[in-house]
Amino acid sequence: MIYGFGLYRFDSDAGKLFRSGNVIELGPRLVELLTIFVQHPGQVLGDEELLEMIWPGDETKGEENLAANIFNLRKKLDSGQYIERITGHGYRFVRDVKVIDPDTSTQGQLLPPGGAVPLDSPFYVARKTDEEFYKAIARRDSIVLVKGARQVGKTSLLARGLQRARESGAMVVLTDLQHPSGEAFSSIEKLLLECGERIAGQMNLKTRPHDMWSGLLSASANFQNYLQREVLGKISSPLVWGLDEIDRLFGFDYASEIFGLFRSWHNRRALEPAGPWRRMTLAMAYATEAHLFISDLNQSPFNVGTKLALDDFTFDQVAELNGRYGAPLKDESEIVRYIALVGGHPYLAQRGLYEMTEHGLDLLSIEVNADYDEGIFGEHLRRMWVSLTRDAELCHAVRDFLEGKAGLTITNFYRLRSSGLLIGDSAQQAQLRCQLYARFLKKHLSLI
Image 1: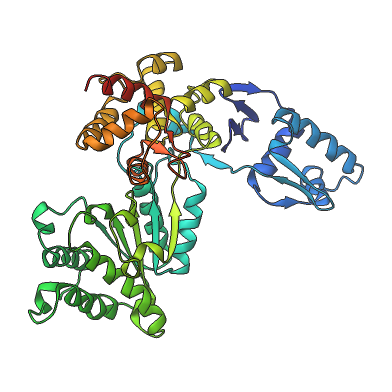
Image 2: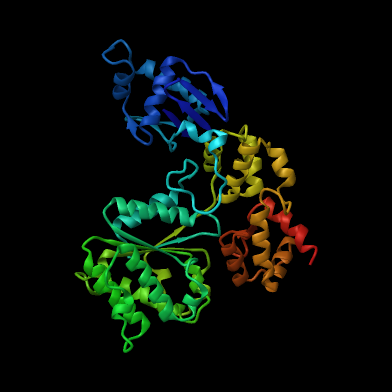
């Protein structure tokens, strides 16, 4: 079995420990001890319990022997960063541990990154938000919001949360608002009919929205009646409705009516404790700052329920991803340089590691050519540029920001943060997301 944690990969069967691709020699006793720890991450293992695992039935081996071996193992693993002593209780392995398929790091099986990461992909790196999302789905919260910039992994997380819901026995339906045609968005009635038809198709329902749509009721009232009677009314299990790219609604006049409808279902949970709405969870993924488009907070689903933010990768997470790609970044200093270049951006981090592994590139060659229009990040950078140049005001705001000028407005800060260009908690704390963006934007903004 191969285990991954931080910069390390441990092959327990072969008794070999690797750090950024380099072998670290371990004696038989340390191999045995490390195997126990990686098989019980986060658990406090008592002294007597460890002694029995390592020297079963040997009463001549005491705590001093155990402490000496753990001391030696900790030296191999950057001192106390991995194994923690819990005074009076025992020891605990404090890092997250992943079981790695040894076949996933071979070059011939790599797929270029892009779009949602498949459920069975070994290159999906879980973040703190993942577990929070799973817990909210398991609790059957009324509304679960996942917010993050473009290409940060919202769809991949949504897919995993919905799969967890299926495995727990819930009925799951998914609406990706990128898919309906422009005609479907021409009116609220057409859009809700489209959503209803897609839900009916996924659930194999005989009665379709068109069969019971009434000209005497509003589109939102018709849609609500359909969900209550034909969807929730026909199942006894919980229902989780995943809504991806919900941002697409923000630009339409009827958006407030749809969001008000979502909010009303949240309220009806409290007003009708025995009603069917207690069995429905809305899981919505979006990037845009909702408060820029919704003026009536009492009609907004974005200020109730569970709100989660999906952030960039940390150092440890980039190191873990690097290990899964076979450690093309050779040591910690290279990982630090790489993070400075791409800023922990999940897509960029994976894209660069893929190119290094698949084509045998080193970090220096990635750094030198990173901001080229036809380089490995070119498609991503061009898409960002096209989006930015559609808005003259944002272009000027970015140019002024790069030149160190004051005056970034709160609205422009939020819009640029939603697009993924800036990071920070406020306009005063705003920073460009990474060196790659700075280099590319300085070069292109100087030409307009």
